[in-house]
Amino acid sequence: MENREISQAVIGRLPRYRRYLGELKKQGIERISSKELSRIMHVTASQIRQDFNNFGGFGQQGYGYNISYLHEEIGKILGLDKSHTMLLVGAGHLGSALINYMKFRTRGFNFVAAFDISPDVYGRSIGGIEVLPMEDLAGFLEKNRVDIAVLTLPKEAAVEAAEALTRGGCRAIWNFAHVDLMVPSSVVVENVHLSDSLYKLSYNIKRRELSETE
Amino acid sequence: MENREISQAVIGRLPRYRRYLGELKKQGIERISSKELSRIMHVTASQIRQDFNNFGGFGQQGYGYNISYLHEEIGKILGLDKSHTMLLVGAGHLGSALINYMKFRTRGFNFVAAFDISPDVYGRSIGGIEVLPMEDLAGFLEKNRVDIAVLTLPKEAAVEAAEALTRGGCRAIWNFAHVDLMVPSSVVVENVHLSDSLYKLSYNIKRRELSETE
Image (cartoon, rainbow over all chains, first blue to last red; front, side):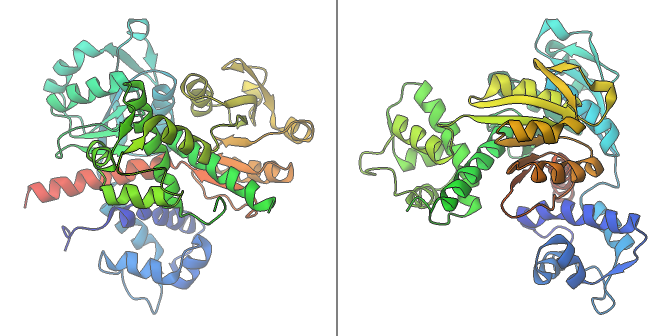
């Protein structure tokens, strides 16, 4: 069952379930019904049950879900019971923010090195990590296991960097560059296209204004 | 037609179409068929036609789409033909990155002020903008029109800040805080939950490993 194909839409909703369960746990609450969880998360109880059924349902619904158990199980499904080593490629403002953000925000995702293409930032320390030249990337990947490369270079440089990462054996890229990376299917890519998100917001602002002047 | 309800999934795909069209335009290409666009974007031609039919189809398919026209029309649909004023709430690493990132990356989204809850950063300048105390927010919103508040405070502070923004008449929030904001439905919210994205990546890494050891 573990390895049945589960839709990315379902997977995309798991972190949000985990976030709410973490809050409930912190409040000392032990059990919750799908109906109550539905109410606080603004999704239907049927959606919750369907999503959880992909993973065997997580226990008896008559008594509600055990919050602590469910929180932990979803964490395991997401692979959060293991730590991950991360590599920053692109030590600009956004890259620096991510190194600093991650350090405080989450557990088990540890930056081990940072690279950049600009000699201006070589040797600089961000989040306690020294920025190295891109030329050293291949050598670094030969000697170190890296789980995730975080790519925050401008798009032209990002395409080249993704190729270097792939050649070096890196198999997961968290991509913030404003471009879709063309990498072998064995490489897992998760995109964060900030401009796309902002443009969607812009659309919804315009739509609201149109509906108000009707 | 302008105001028919179009699904957020379709809207979410528009920025990516626009991005590819912008690249093609830069390459001096004038027309493209849905088939060819489908090939470079790795989506089906039928999906493209369906998406575009929401907006009247954008011209004759026999001759392909006029790239420059389509790029501009999608920009208009997204409201990118107008400029937007932005307010930063949370002047930490991520907020600073966004002010600096946006400045170089996109057009028409202009930060006009920055606020924070920490006296440590009051008076500091980020991206050329002075950081003001949160106490000044209400007064600022009374005197200035703000299109979008960019919220990068830690989650507890973000909930309070969202309330202050809503009270002050701000009607759109680009939310980077790790919490779902409860705001009136007249306020448009677009979330960027970075941890959720990272956790999804973590899941896909784990899944790939499982499938390889089968």
